[in-house]
Each structure stands twice: as structure tokens, then as C-alpha cells.
Length: 408
Image 1 (cartoon, rainbow, N blue to C red):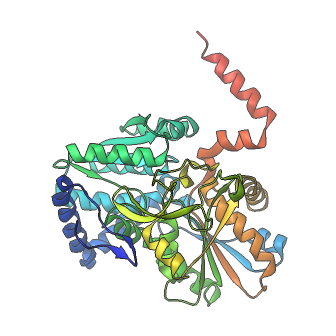
Image 2 (cartoon, rainbow, N blue to C red):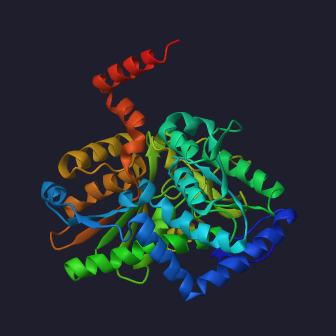
Image 3 (tube, rainbow, N blue to C red):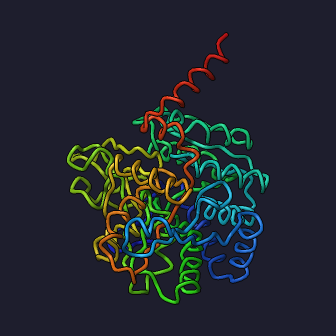
């Protein structure tokens, strides 16, 4: 193991010997492109022509009036191509893979947004594509599985462990070990061994760069607070990156599930249930027992139930460079419904965690203050989960009717 990629006591690259040469090549390639201004220009141009960037910063006038406190702005990553911030990272890694001369990409996915984005990138660049997805997530995010397969990817349900995101990551690493000469692993979040936390944050930083410029153009001043949901941490690192040197409070919102006291949650940084440990090639806070075994997690959103968290956010937590809160499943559904009804915008369940916390705090803030909520994705993919949570009888009748058409 080389001493590299540390963020305080977190991060690193704890690798089997067989992967060291592959990671050495990856680090070298990433350093090369990061130091090449022409690569960033090529990346921004691609995201502009293919992925509708810059995404808008929308003033939520009705929500602001409803709460009567700080002015609420929403960074609209839901309008990015494929419907989430995930495209920022995969298109950047796709450009890099093309320069590396590899022909196959693999990825893990939880909510399916990273899988759809990776399958889209593979189709555009002509790569073979395999997506690993926990069997539980395959069932609750079936529409995204459909689109991944239609885009030409092979989707492999992972049946080991708890059959969610962490198990999909394990399976993707097993694939990579045996196919490293031809294959690149497009890790979707700011976790894993170095250089993935830095690399994913680098490509996602386009969110923060845009948001900072947009709010200064519109309001002539910076926001008081920026909110983002936190699973692995990619969208949070993306928007936080634009405000790291500013007097702006950064608020990460984790999945509180059925409440912290219930134990049925995925809160690593704002509960007492996580501890530092090493797994999946890096060190961070993991929800683990005294023997280092990973605990089961729970969230209404498939994208926030990862057992670990970005080592960069872990350091920001310990150094109090960001504040971390949680939102429960019930609070998330309520925030989603309110945002739809007041603004005509459908946030993903993941993003709705950030909305839920912002809605708690906005009324207590001055009308002269501004907050930005990062809407990391759109909620269309969550229709089955949200319909179940709401208990809509018309939706149930529709599903029964549609299922009847497939009989025989």
C-alpha cells in the first residue's frame, strides 16, 4: 500500500497487490488530465452540448413565501442529461477511458441513476458496459434497470450479502481484478481507494462552480447555507466545492430512515452508530459492529443507504468544515410532496432529504439570507416507492390492471 490520497486520518488506497499497477496507471492518467486545461475545456464543452449544462439555479418563490424566512434557490441537477448529477462524473471518466484506450466499463449502482448515466456514456463512446446492482435495488428501481438494458448495458443483480449498494461495489471490484487490462471501473461516488474520491469530486465540482457564479450574478452575494443530501457524497462534494473558501455554511443531510433511535437508518456522520474502519479499499466512518462487520442500513431512497461515506466528508465532519444532519423517511416524503405542490418540481427521494432539512431551517432565518438546495436528481424513477408511501388508491388500481394484461 502506498501512503497516498489521505484526508486527515481518512482515505488511502488499501489494495490487493494485483490491482496496484492498475491504480498506479489511473493515478498517473488523472494527474495528467487534471493538469491539462484543455481537458477541462473539452469536458465543459461536452457537458454543454450533450448534457444541457449549465443547469439552472431556480428561485423557489412559492416555497420562500410559504416559509417566510430565507430566500430559497434550487440547483437543478435533475435537468442534467439522464436526470441526475451522476452524468457529470461518468462523462468525465468516459473521456479519460477513451484516452487510456480501454474498451469496457463496469459500474455499481444503487438508485440506478449512476447505472443509467454509465450505460449512456458507454453507448456514446462505444464501450461494452456491465452494471452491478443489488437484487433489492433491482426490485425497487425497475424503471432504471429497463433503461440501462435498453441502452445496451448488461445488468447483473447481486445476490450476496444484504443485496444493496455495498454488495454491488464488492462485485464490481471482483470483476475488475480479473479484467483490468481491458476494463475501467467507473466508481460512482466520492468513496473507494485513491484516486476515486478526488477524481469524482473533481468532475462533480462543475456543480459548485456554476452555482457560485449563478447566485452572484442574480443576487450579488453568496448564500448563507448550501444543502445537499449525503449517501457516498458525490453531489455534496460537487456543490460544496464551489464554496469551500467562502463564509458559507455547508449542510450535508443523511438518511435518517425510521429514526436514529430505531437503528434503521444510514447515518454515518450524525449518529453514534458509525466508527472509523477500513473496507472496500479505503478508510472512513462505516456503520459496523465491534467486530468490523458491516451493519444493515435502511433508507426510503436506494441512493442513500450506503454503509460508508466519502473520506473527504469524514474529514470535513471531524474538522467542523461542514454540518451534518438527517431526515427521516416520513419527513422526506412530506418535503417531496410540498415541493411538487408549491413549485411544480419533482425532486428525487435522495434530493428530498436536503429539501426536508432546509425546510426546517429556512423559517428561522432572516429574509435577507439566501439558501441553495442541490436537487441532485429527478423523482420520476421513484414513482413506485413514492406511490407506496403515499398509498395512492388510483395508482394501485392502475398497477393491478396493468399486471392483468400480462397474465398468460
